[in-house]
Structures are given as C-alpha cells and as structure tokens.
Length: 411
Image (cartoon, rainbow, N blue to C red):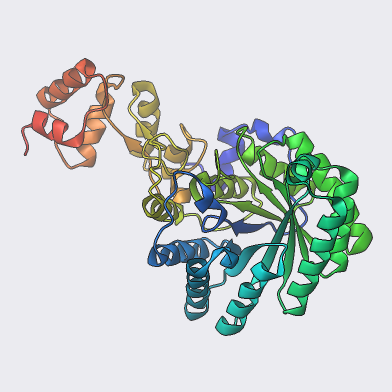
C-alpha cells in the first residue's frame, strides 16, 4: 500500500500548484472579531458573559493570536464584559491577546486604559476613523479634522501605555493621498499597526493587492516595522479571496468572525479562513476544535449553521449519492482513511475533527445500505437490504436513522 507521504503526487494532480501562490515570508497572524464586530449583525444575539468566555477559550485552543473583546466606550455592560474576558485570559494563562475597538476620541480610549491597568494585561487599542470621501461628505468632516483627531487619539493612547492599531474605515474606497496623510500621522504618533478595511465589502482581490501594496509603501517611508492588518466584509462574497490577496500583498494579520457573522452580510469567516490557510501551508494550527468553536458561536449568538455550510455544516462530509458513496466506501473498506478523506472531498474531514459519513436516500446504491448496516454492527441480510433500498428509492429525501431501524424491525 502506498504511504501517505507518497500519495499526493501519485493520486492527486493539483492544478492549484500550476501557478503556485508564493508562501508569505512572514508568519500569518489571526485576529478574531466575533465578540465585537461580529455582534453587530442585525440577527445576532449578544451572548451572556459565560458564553463569551467559552468562545474566547475556543479561540485560544485554535491558536488564534488576538481577539477583539469589545468596545468599552459603548457603556457599562461593555466595560464589565471586556474586564471579565481580560481577567479570564490572565486566569487561564491563555496565549491569545486582547484588543478593543475605540473611536478616535479620548473618552473611548480611557476605559481601555483603566481595564488594562486593573487587569494587568496589555490591551491593544484599535482606533478607527472614517477615511473615504463619501463618508466625509455624509458626515460633513474635513481632512484636517480627521488628522487632528488621529493625532490626539493615538498620542493619548500611547501615553497611556496602550499598543495602538490605527484603523481607517472604508479604506477600499478612499483616495490615496488621504490615506497617505492619515496613516503617516498615526505612525508618527506611535501606532504600531495599521488596519486596512473593506467596510462595505466593495473590494476585489486585484483591488486589495493594489491597496495593500500602496499602504506598505506608505508605511515603509515612515516605519517599516509597523504591521499591516486586513479586515474585510463579504457583501460581494469575495471575503476569502480578498484575505488571501491581502496576505500575499503584505498584510501580516487578517481578521475574521466565526461563521462569518457581522453587519449586513457579515465578515470573512474565521473557520473557513483557517482551513484555507492550513491547506495552503501558510499556518500549521490544529483545527480539530473548529466544530466546537462554531457550535459555541452558533448557539450563543443564535445563528443556526446551514446544513450545507462548508466544513462545519451537517452535510459537509456526508454523501448519499450512490457513485460518490461507493468510492468513499471502497476506500474505507481498504482501512485507508487518508484515501476516504480525499477521494470525494476537497477538505480532509479528519483535519477538522470530523469524519466521512454515508447516508441512505433516493440516489443511493445498495452499497450505501450494506455499509450503513455494517457500520452499526447489523448483519446486511438480503431481505433487509432490499427493504431499506426500496424505501429509499420511494423517498424524496435521506432516510432518518429511526426510519431505517423501523425498516430493520428494531425499536
């Protein structure tokens, strides 16, 4: 039998590698926005603090580097939750580091500084301000006002001992000279990171590439050690391609939310981002905890996971179609889980803590029925197989387990 290490070249011709994307020359960091930006989704429920803590721990187990734990300037409950989450990071000796969103106003930054001092952990201040001409026009803002607020806010946060990420909203529709002046001012005032945002999901991968390269050149003129973040929304469904484009263009930290929750159509989906980065070899995180991470978010935020959702949906690794299932079954009969995981799947189920599943429905073959029975220690007698197979052919959907047991004659 072929060894796993020998198989990809012999069994899988990977057209993705005909024009291979160069591996980024820097470690890719992940920032999770689920507990702040994700909660802006109109249908999302803001979960209780114990659920937030469980989600944060799940992030930590997945090796996610940083998490936005709230916007303390929003009021007392936000302050309480951010404080509790930061205390949990300290008490649990987690590796994940917290950050907090804030407008570029002192009154939003002050509570972050107080929490950091009381908990005894650095909290990155993510100071955001609108940057596009359309936003300036709607708000009656001037560039001079934006520059003044930037200078005051960043300088205050730095004075308070907070690491600063400077965030321009709607970067993907902002004029180059405006961005140059805003980012240069922020970096000169002490910002250690800048965040490029696709606030309304406007960008294409080509646009992201051009923009990140431009921002990198602007930052390099001032302080080449400053990191670049990418924060994208999925209004056009281009969230994941844009994340990959941003990394290749020079962004070393990318943002996402579990299940892609967030305002309007949501943010880039963290779990799908991690799967793709792992498959590309750009990260080496253990992804077995992804289903639990997504379950906690789904239940806590009351956002059901669609059954056909990639990777963590109920149907993601399930097949009832005869010819497809037959290939998986033959691989499993060889006791070859590597083969079974790939013969009809672009994502290995075992990599995300799941397994291939064979079900019985109107498109199934007899092999589905036989395998289903054997997997449960039930003898696949001809009359039983025929009874189940005939019922499946008359059905308009996959048979449920109790229905199959009833056909077998079991309670």
